[in-house]
Length: 372
Image 1 (cartoon, rainbow, N blue to C red):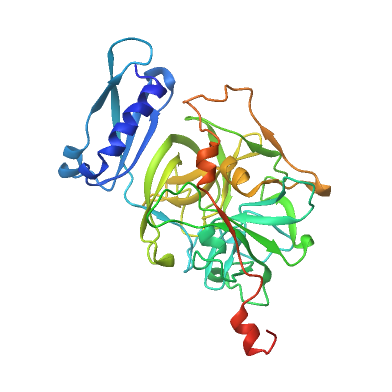
Image 2 (image 1 turned 30 degrees about the horizontal axis):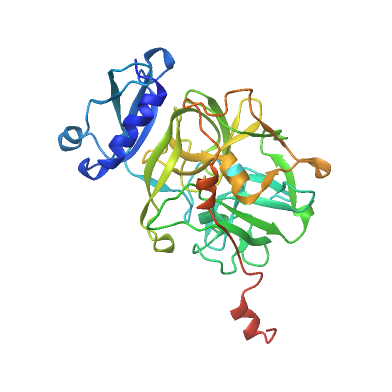
């Protein structure tokens, strides 16, 4: 049986050959039997379809040097037809969990949020890891930022696809974000909105209540739950980690299809990631934040997510709690460098993620009103 460390070596080998595997949209690491660790680790290839040409381009195994002995190990390859993976902001209505699309004050995690014209999901209510009591709304860049730039973007609740209007439903504005790169490495799709008043955001999560904090890492087979604007409350299991994957952003900010590194794929038995669910946060069974949904497979049954620990590192934030307290970071008592689990961003990786500030007001409108 192959170990996770050996599977990571094999994955790195395949990533270099990606161009020679047409139809492959993602390369990750999971369980060889698809259920538990008894069968060892494998490479998981996500493909656009199950055609003969795609199958011919996918190897059945990859040979790598054993970690423990002077021999070679054949790491098996499991192929999953996921279809193309797309980011999930909603610009039109769909008949799913309507209860999370209405106006709610104060705003809590799990409900519709966005900007005029589009809706995603309020992921978490967070605050600075320092002593500041300022609260922020955390979600995806493409949910809170209309064009992937530092221009002014109004945050409204409900989002624009759910009847939210500029001015009347404004709760804040884009505050900080990580720019998505068309030609470069992407790790997270994340942004913060600052409210017009702290009282507009309540540190609670729909149907769950209090989020206790966040986990530093998690592994294949872990079971999660979340609430999203479209699919409502759903559950899923981590199918693969360390997954490099191509995500189609369509016409949003001229991005097209861009690549993300070391992502997590979470599988549901029903749709768990549909348009409008972007920004929703997966929780552990004990109510700790774990991963951030930002895209999904063609049928919605696979969520593409990144570890929330990465956003906490990038923005210097923690889960907000009542009375100004901050959620704890749970380490689970595991080894810090365990290939079977996700890892916090290294110093080098964190150095490539630059958070950018957004303008406080729309200067064009100010000029028209003679205020600037």
